[in-house]
Image (cartoon, rainbow, N blue to C red):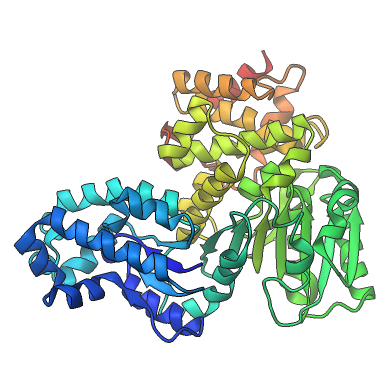
Length: 518
């Protein structure tokens, strides 16, 4: 398949295509705007002015279709920003590896203004109209994309190219997100069959590609079902399933097993399992020999839509959840949503609470699908949630600002887990209850009722009879996010508009928790 770059004006498709072609060993990249200028005998903007947009789009469509029809394997083609408006082009792209270079409207406007908006960019003459075009085209780019890449620094495509090649060669529908954070970037591959059908080929070395040995950490349930799917490992350490294993004692057992097996900093950990395995294995990787790489292979919905991304690792103390931990970004994440079909219904339901949380934060199409009940625990939803979370982490890796929004529902949710000894509620179930408390504190009774119905429809608890309010409030008071006397809460104004760092009176917190016990 060809590798086709799409995106809005100013996304840098021309430069990116040249870099990517060089990284893939291609002699050149094809750029439709440049080829059209050659065909017209004058700049694209001049043709636009002479013949009008309709005639220009017709010529562009024919050129793009001809290029796609004759493209060789891994040939790199950069398309003009508006070429994807053609339904014929959209259908033709179904057979190619389409890479969406993402850019926000403000940055795009700054770039095209600096590089000749107006005569050189006939569709960039008016800022409001420009923003409208961006909003109109973004859903099309997203729907067509096999890979979504945010801003990539100069020379960065050399690192991305091997992972685009995997997507390009994959028989099914694998999609790539390129995660960015202050401490490093990494690939996220999402696709049905990646673990079950291709894990033994990919995971022994992926994504390090340098002969690093894999040391797997998993739990007993996952090991029985998917242990062989990761392929050859130097060692597999198996822990007991459940939150009770996320302890210092378990971490010590993992560290000692890695040391006894001779693991070095040239090797890496594979975290195969749900959120508990991912948090524990990530923490062990962050601290073993002061840090070794970890590859996250999430097998539960909670992990696939949330915890596998972003680099938060940790273990619990009796006093509070995740009280000991470290930020340690993964070297890569390989997510196979097809494994979700083997989860018990209650585990799948628990993961749905994190989907609802992410949708409330992201708003837009994701919230619309979740609110309408059309979203399902599948590759589309996993991809949308992972993308939403990674966008937040890219802006704030260490909870200094924007990332605090991801704690929505978790302050009370973690307290419920702690107060019930990590035994009565799964993490997602507690988060669902915490979301209801957060929406009460947000003064959004109608939205709270809507979310309660969404959670109940998936079989999630919407009340916690018999749980001691005082013990929950005591655990809230010990929350690790507390700053001095202040415990900041995340509140919801509207789906897609959340506020972090909010001060809430103790009496209101008590009322929100008490409401859950009725």
